[in-house]
Image 1 (cartoon, helix red, strand yellow):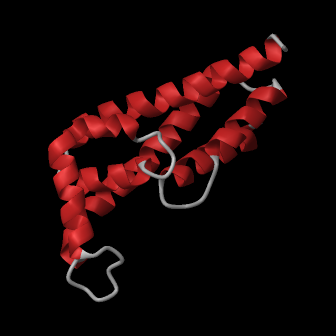
Image 2 (cartoon, helix red, strand yellow):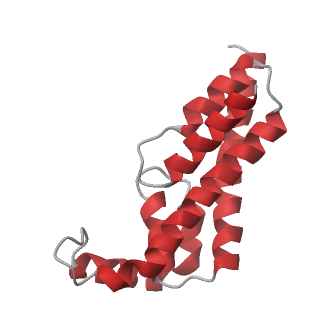
Image 3 (cartoon, one colour):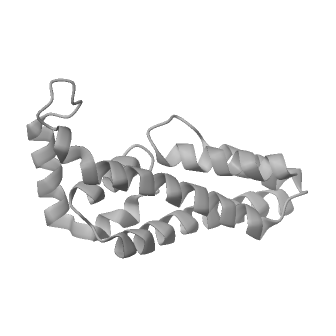
Length: 147
């Protein structure tokens, strides 16, 4: 059972970075297995995903040091664009950190924009825990009350 929890943590952590991992599929699989604690699964998935987002935030904090390098993957214009969007919508965009494709870059931009870690953790934890909670509720509802 420990390997299931560990696998979920690794998948959730990696999925919050730019790695192409699917923590939702792992969570659903473990829920359907029926041998794992719901609350422990939700806690581990959330913890792993939030810690992966913190890695993005940390990378964002240091990205400005490398923006003039040839190998840097983001143009100055793209970086300026990200700054403008963040200034417009602010820290509330972190409530979208759970959304596929856009969520991970938002956490990186929050680091670039020097978002305070306490507020980053609060908003990202709220968003990601709600996502996993809704997914678990839908999964259990679908299993317990088949249509």
